Length: 257
Length: 199
Figure 1: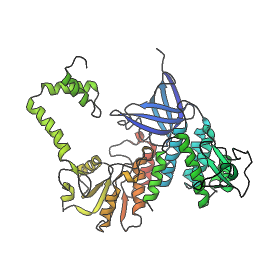
Figure 2: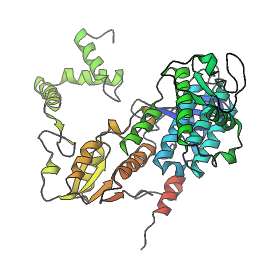
Figure 3: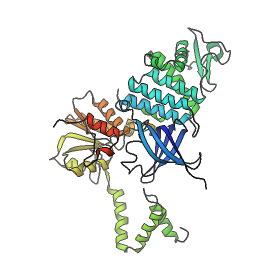
Figure 4: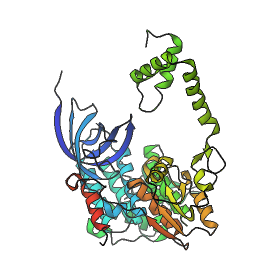
């Protein structure tokens, strides 16, 4: 019988599953182990050992043991590093942070370390704390996550004729082929929505832009709508499932207007 | 399980569906039921069926009740101008136990949980808006849980009611009575300092 190895890592709380009367199965996105699933025994009852730690998108220090990489970790202790209190005080920010972690959860396979995704979560949650939950912030997060997860859409050229993006032209996004086509290659139907070169350039810029500059970007209404339709459509095509937090975000907006 | 007769196996399987009951506990309970008198067993079975048949939600506050309205909504001595909004009936029961609140309640039957796909449409918010629309309500106390879901729900209700001329308050957060500061987590401590009161 192999001995249990003890590990320590920092991780964002992604998801909770109630298990039995007092246990929780917690999914983290950790810096050293990627997506990690562990059982916290007695977590629902213990007010001292696991007090306030398993809240969505909290950054925690986890000490856990496990026999092998493919087994459920046994969470020995968990301490808060960051609660993101400012995010939790704002409904729009809470919904956006939930969307970020849900995407990270869906796009990352268990046990595959990807420090860039951990840093992305840390950076964008910090940006949410200091700035607005803007459309630009959400779209640039999606672009970067798609890139780091290996699903980056081809936006810098037409995927058919390879011609680079030209100002003033219109493009059509083909989710199944993972990229844009120029108007002559796309042969658009009447119901196909064109995307402006400006939208495409903004998304390309946001993918690699300096973090400090992101909060200075404000998308116009048409640019926000075009980029949202493109990326949300592509994400649901790749995941082939509904993103629940996005649905809730839209419900809240409708409910409060 | 193999050694048990078929009816006992069925009883164990049914009891094991209850929350917190595993197969061993279910077997222990079924042994108790076997030894109990027929009268006791009938009372137990009837009370389970009665709960399912007779309990419905109060027309006003959505608290489970056997009448059209619950005993709290029927009590005219309670302050009808204040509504305390809670997530679940057990939170209402906990506040009632304290004995210090004399207003009315509204049970949402859930909290906003984006990751589980629970949005405003899944909560009993329209019923709350209807009650507020009557013009009688002066204060709403948001007593949702002090976690991410409860806070988001409180923020949502605040946003929904911001245009209305109603006082909106949130239950206090901080160290529990009889607690020891050295064992309290840092977020609770920071909240207790933020919401400190003058003496």
